[in-house]
Length: 318
Image 1: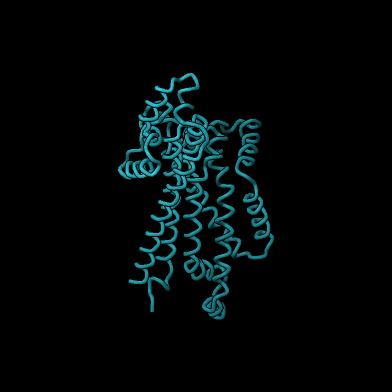
Image 2: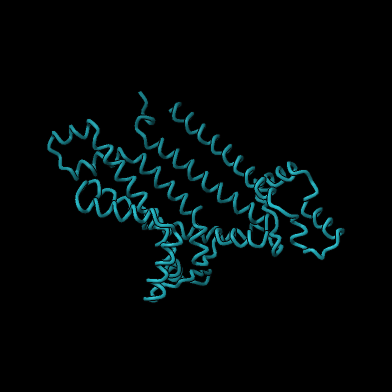
């Protein structure tokens, strides 16, 4: 366990350093934007005294490195600042938006992950059959299509032509669970098109790779059926790469929803980020970007740790 603990600790340290580097890139990227923020907000008719007072209020008169460390220190302590667009605390603005993004990602994962694993198992069981070829062709096509294209096709078919689901996925706290699921069905289906294909192909590849192992050949010589070999012997030994790809796709579901949220006008963090960019609300842009980055780094770190914990060679070293 010492070796495993050392590897996990190394991953955690690397994750923290990665997040620190990303925060620096976000800050530098915002700093590199052309124009004066105070002048852009107040307008060209503002007097120099007003602009200077506003710059002092936003602490834009301080050196960049001081503002960066002040921002990171406040972020770590839960103070995300205030929105320049409405003056509300950013934590209050982001809180329910991020919860909506998690709802969209979680609802998609609930049916996308089991479906992908089942399809991957079936494709491995019936390898090189017509079923395997059809599933591989469909999933590869789904992976190749951009999310906005799939979204607009689904809107045209299921919203405009058949009127089954709304084209605008607006939800609120007064809606029941069923009403929310009905409202977000199309964005969930759009996200599922991509992640199901990826997870299915990785599951299939992982199981087929294990099937070439010597212990599988021994099981075949003992007369054990192919389905039992895959379910009882191959799948448990293929859990490490499967868990890794599942958690990585969860990271995509949380972080990669920006385009889907914009298409369906879904009130999530991705939509808030786009609105903040258009309004030049830079504190919201910085906070949203860092929250997305922290979520992605955390889920990637979780994928690495779970992958190591599910590896028998690391759990039981000889």
